[in-house]
Length: 560
Image (cartoon, rainbow, N blue to C red; front, side, top):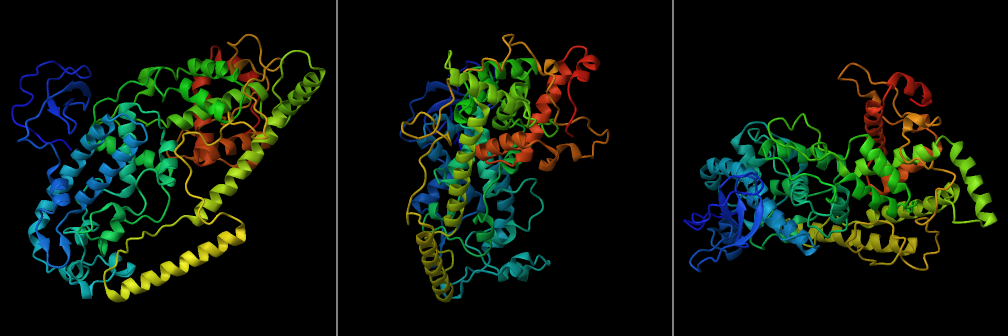
């Protein structure tokens, strides 16, 4: 969050290069930023020692300037707890190599939502602060039945005390358009990454969260000791499930619409989120031939997915109707379309081409030709191994923190006993499964598979040729491929019908199902999400085809 400093920006009258407004502020790093569009420029300002550019709430919490409850801790609000978590997440992203502007952008985005939360808190402060602070001896975590009981009485609120001032009424308030939550902190992170156009997709962000490189699970460990989480606070901050790709994307879109953000910076061809860049990344990760990138670029151009006006997200009053593009899912969907162009993925043509490639490779004339069958066998082993590792990691995943969120003597003893039993069981099952007792988390990386390492014992297909598979004319489209089949034949006219978004695996060839599952493993998204995106890409291709009625007759409509 930025703190206003009197008369420090009045002498700078240059317009913003992004929105042409003259509305400057100074960030915590003493850099000028535009208050209208949150663009950060290189110009800096020397600040006098008398001015302290820090968030006053966080400063007062960290220095202990708040009024303390007797034998309990500081007075604090729920929005301040989320603000502290957002700061920790921004610091973690900066430590991973994201530009320092990520802290400025994320705090700017969060300030709008947090200010609205603070306005609500201020109206509750008088009545809430009059409540008697719970004593340490009588503290205890309320049961789920107590939390669920919203029958209107003030006695019900006062009977469930919390560590924060507004924790008892926060979850029961219906006046907030979007309620702050732990998944929303990831939405703030993703919007900030999009704004600075960092080299991290949403799937990369969730993988970093899973391996605890970004603070999310057990957030109470990042709170100062005097900020007690108790009772209803636990329901607000405690996490007991993994965030999903589609949920965070949906929250990000709703959040951007609520904040009415200006148009995001354009997604140009040099940007990491551009389909041509991400397609190259996933072609490398999925061990596919480099020559396929020419075809992905062709499909991107044919479907007009390289247009910055199409790719760039425009938030504001109409953004609820505008879809936020999942750039990582879009890129793998384009690759799936290209694989269907090359090999049909109909459980017939791909195996015929594999036999021809094997015969030519045995003859040893020229470069090595890509063998779909060998690639299929290699990647299936990798996918199965990754599934096994992921299941083990989820089984060993610890949802509890070392910092106990119960302060009564009886509750603390009960939780410590449960924690010891859980640790003993986890160690025993680990020894039975033959896993290391403390293997640690994976290092931060945007690649799940790495084919550049030596002595992996697996074939690298990057340099293999598509000779005899792809036509020399690289302008060929799916309309000219006789073996191409469409995922979706027709949409229902009713806007309420959702059957065309569904993915019934039994209705599709096994090769296609394998490719979808492989990409689903890499991105950790549902297979139906990739299948749906493939249908959207095919729809754009068909829309751009000349002589649609004649061309569509050449496409084999086999699978619905």
